[in-house]
Image 1: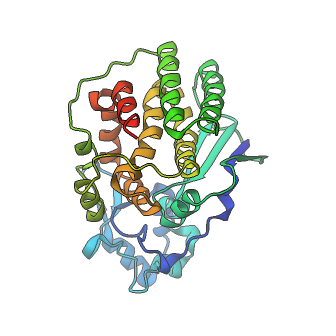
Image 2 (image 1 turned 120 degrees about the vertical axis):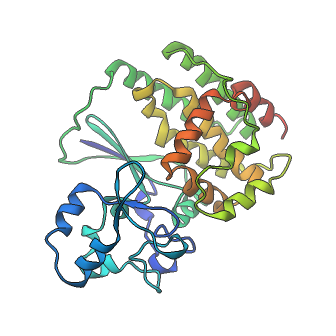
Length: 321
């Protein structure tokens, strides 16, 4: 299998108890089947602790029930994981072992990156000075089983390379690049599938008030938004868009909705522009949205159907700068 990662991927190191916004606080963690099978054979205090906090959510998923202040029940007073200490990090739930990494498999290609939802990862991408490029290597993993349309996949691969070149065109202003990117995606979408918009009229800023609140600080940022966008510098804006294009663009092979993925990339730049021009702000948004099924499903719907997130409206907002 070919493995594709950003050039900075291996620079990430978890800072554990020193983290200013622990990934072990704010959201529930699923207990995956492989981990549950391992826990059955444990004994002693850690076994009793695990059994005492396992629960089912409203969707029937097995989760670890949160403690006070939405803290993971294994997060101790030093902000370290008692489960990790007791049985090793390799036996913590899959989500805990992989966060903040994301993995996208496309048959013989695996793409892996790190998410803005982690403050350390957010700082890395926000402050990246080198080009947002990628490394390629071949490993011994077998190709993943899939039923993707090979023709569409290669069409999207070529289109993503074009999208990369649009956003990296330093001869143009950031807003001009973003407007060109939207126009490119709009035309590409017409070639792939119908795209109907304007079923929702939720006001632009209300779109960022998610139904599931993970960190109330994000709610305050949305309520205190600026009226006119203050864009991050060109390099930061470029890094944000590259993150979204890398993470989401090719997933259109599954739903034929490439335009929403590009809208998300453009809105990625608008988030710090309106809510706080720093790495912390986009970290808060990412933790709030990308890692909540409830919030992310709502966001995906609004991206496709909200008239205030149409290509025309987003272009209008970009032209305010």
